[in-house]
Image (cartoon, rainbow, N blue to C red; front, side, top):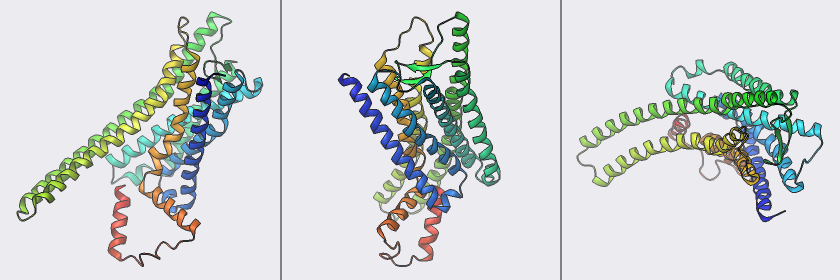
Length: 341
């Protein structure tokens, strides 16, 4: 084993540990916070975290073993199971992100009717489709005996059959349809939903900015530094919305894009994929499992509040011991902040 493969193994191990711990924190927050459980997006986040934990405990260790042994880590039956699990979890993860983007689009574009449009019944229906979609596309290669260990990716996955030209053509068509209906579909939904969210957010920022400028113009006695600080805050608010959208879409493309493009490129008979690049693209795909908790949940106010509550309970602290009872105005401000976030 050379230094490059050792670094790849360490990278996968680090990603697996980070994915397991961060997604476990998400599940812990979900279990301890009634506020999070009452929100419909929590269902999508919960499904996403379960998929990431399974990937960290099943598919990532098998890839590490494949790299360490330089070949198939287990028998044929287990390899087929791993291939199914890898495709199922990856597809389910993509569709869960698409579902989260749809939820955000409804919440921002239709804020007054959000509670009636996005109920738990609709959320579970969306998850049901995601599971059926993932199950169908993951089971097909197993039933058609298109699964085996691939040294290019050091993992059990779908492999192009070489015994006949017809089988190769069928596999090529299936692979293109699979990635089109999974990666391309999810990316399209993400872009359309989040760009609409960004458009609405910018519109509201402009309205707030107009009101702020008019108010500052009327307050002639206010210090110029205060005016400058208010205008700077408006600019930061616009940039914050753009950065969040870029993180949502950019992380999806960065992590899934290289692997999908590599799988499509290897369908061309004249193209030979480098082993190291194949494993690197797999590592990028795995890294999304470690990013998702921070992108979609742990950095949000409700989850931070839940983590602080869990920490206080573990340390035996009383939340109100240092500050005393909060007054009604503080409570009202906190509720308003939660609605905004």
